[in-house]
View 1 (tube, rainbow, N blue to C red):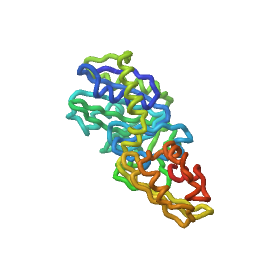
View 2: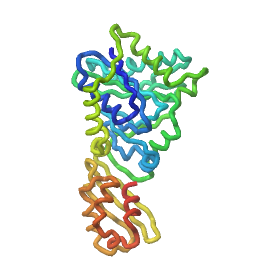
View 3: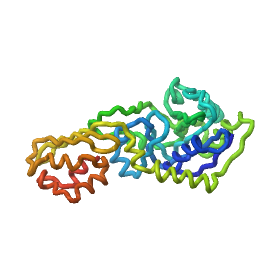
Length: 328
């Protein structure tokens, strides 16, 4: 097995590296990667992004959103969270999570902590989750990856994965929220993330007959960065791949109530109705029509309304107030 050295904390790069490892890695050797991300929310492949995140909080904190290849629920990453990826030939072990989580459990045993699989795809300490795992099949190869909460900021996790109170209806796979814990809470003597990384790497690699470390070449980096720039950092992948869904935004202003219903398909507004007891200065259907076909994100809505006289239709509002209601 090859251990790929990766010091990047860029979530777009790290998710791209995973895809490169499972789809384009030369030869037939298995590989193993340990990696960390700067603050980010990682969305499951089949999830509706806005249904899983607190978008306002993420924007305020500069927390990135990235969709991964595998299914499962949304997770929060920061530098107190350690991630591991194992890519093997043959996919007969798809859904066999225990085979790949065993090194994590034995690594924790070495530092005096008893952990166990909970029967699904999580590992727990005293019934509290610290690791979530997921898998992805590509042809005859299998990628298994998991998160490990070591000393993550759980308060940030709670805020980032707490969607705003708005009505969203979709067929996306919903995350299951569990009671979570950091490994650091259960240590009898201090252990750093770096020390635990070394212990975990030893446990993963110790059963392998052939093992060595590998530095990414210029060719590797070129390919991974191409995936990063053209897929993993792109709105089309992170938001546009969400299943079709409906959004309802409503608010009471001094000038009246407004109730906006949106249909979203492939990240675009496919339907729009604006209700309320406000006094419109023009035919509100003209405002509805101009929004249809636009990308459902703040930047695009703002651009759409630049040449549109919004006050003609909603005399007592302004563009910022309307966009905040529509997109946040």
